[in-house]
Length: 179
Image (cartoon, rainbow, N blue to C red; front, side, top):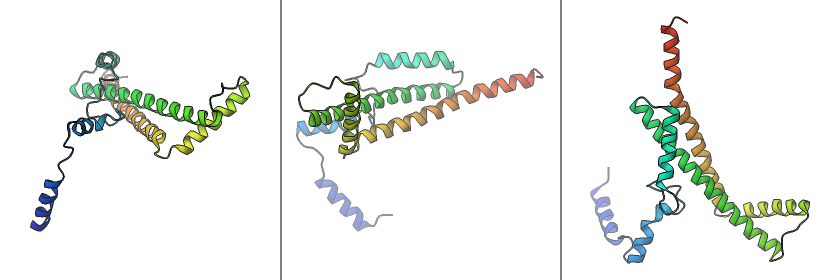
């Protein structure tokens, strides 16, 4: 429990930290959660994604799993959101990696056309990938891959939960049928 002195100090600090004051600062801070879209509060980023595509994904999953209970419907919605965000994470990881590879290639090869020899091109690509990873000081590529790995695990867990009630019902039917 906070003391009266701590509460008073907190109130004084709160008076000084008012957040952004300019219209530009307020507009910028309102988009903080949408920087990559991976941690967005609203999971459909309408600037780059089509809500109708999400609805199509949800309809496809509903048709596949045919949820019968509210819990199953919730799990299907959760799965749709996880798949949607995993697709976004994969696009982010690919874009960040491509940008880092391009920068490494320009630094190494300059403005020259890429080599035509497949062996040399493969070696250059491998070297550029290593340079891109070494330069990734903010760990942007690794963070994108980390988000994707978490989403993949969540998808697998949700799929197991979705299949569990169906499997249990099938076992019950077999027991009642005397098989």
